[in-house]
Structure formats: C-alpha cells, structure tokens
Length: 165
Image 1 (cartoon, one colour):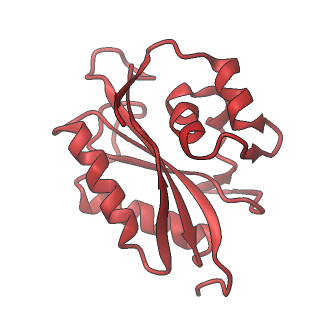
Image 2: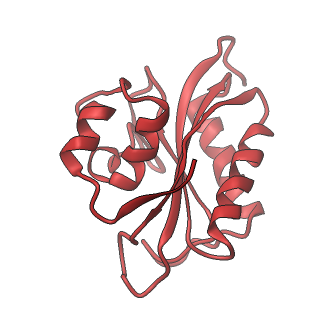
C-alpha cells in the first residue's frame, strides 16, 4: 500500500554487460515508470573497475534520486522486477551483470531484515556508489556513516572516471 506522503529514496545503478551505458540509461527510464514514483535527480555516468573478480568488463555506474510513495519493501520489489525485466540473472556474487539496482538509502528508514538493509551496508566504502550519489545529494547524511561528500573524499577516486554528464 502506497504511503500517503512523497519521500526521497536513492538508488545506485550499475551495468557491465550488453552496452552498459545504454543499460544504465534504460534503468533511469524504467525507474520513472514505477508506480507512485518519480525520478527527480540523475547523476553523471561513471566508468569503474569491478569490485569482485577482475576478469570481467568495467562497470558503468550512476545514481538516481527518487520521490516515492512506496514503502522501502515495495520499492525494493519494484527494483528487483526491473532487474528481471532487463535480463538480470542473479548467479555469481560480484560477477558481471546486465543491470544492478540497489536501494541505498531512504531517509527515515532504518531497516535490517532478510533481503533489505537500509542504509545499504556497502554505501560508505564504495566509490562507485558515492561519486554518483555525490552528484545528486552531496549533503545527504547516511546514519552511522556521515555525509556523502565526506564519505566520497574518504574512499577516494581510484579506478573511477566520468563517462558522460
């Protein structure tokens, strides 16, 4: 059931298969088609080295700022549905993927349950999440971690570059 108020949510986007820049652009479109949800901010696209096995293509990463009336659980369900519709097959952890959509943070939602942890546990240590997120919400405070702009400086920019604005 949709929440009566519009609330912000932040989604990390990544792809390293089947024309990754286009897959990320397609993800922005698909996010805008979620019920009771609007994409209000889009980051630049970044090229990043893979986090897991290095014998795979570089990733293209971005972030989306949403306004939604969905609960965190409903929004996660929508993200997983988009991944499936775009051909995501969850097999290898940190392996190559057509698309990856992670709900990173929804202000006011501290959640730790099977399948959903908010804030996302990797948000404070992953430059491929923080750099795009800093494009759209540098002052955003992640509980227990700090402000996005400070976290970005702490992790540094090794292995990340802007692909397109």
